Length: 158
Ligand code: ZN
Image (tube, rainbow, N blue to C red; front, side, top):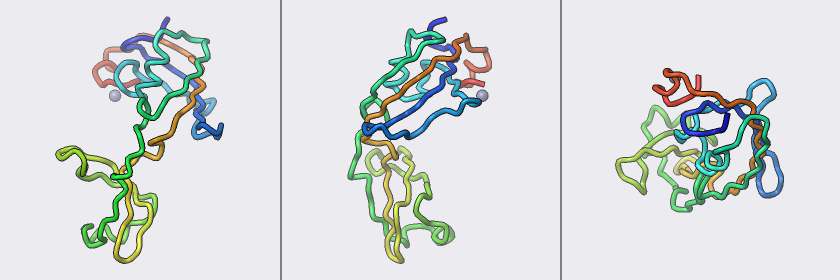
């Protein structure tokens, strides 16, 4: 069966950056299953897998625009510590993520990550860790099947 709209696709994957450094990979006993055509994986990868079938290996280079977006320096912000509610200040440390109003798109929420902080300011970024990175995927297509009604209703693989 070919990979296409509303099919459940199981893949093994390895993700590397331009320097060949491995950023992520699926483990042998836990491949990734997703519902195709619903935006559950990055657009460039979803498009590249279309039409392939189980047993195939697909290697694809995905530019940032079709992955996690270009790096936006305007999303690197220094926020006064006292802008955070008092009860969360003690929990702020590098790597902590929180969701808040998107400064670029009012009405939308965006995830920010704390980079560093001192007693006055918290440096945060709204960029995804892989923003601006060209991604190289090596995909093994393991299984392709029709989605069940409950999966179509939920919009993801079970
Ligand atoms: Zn579900």
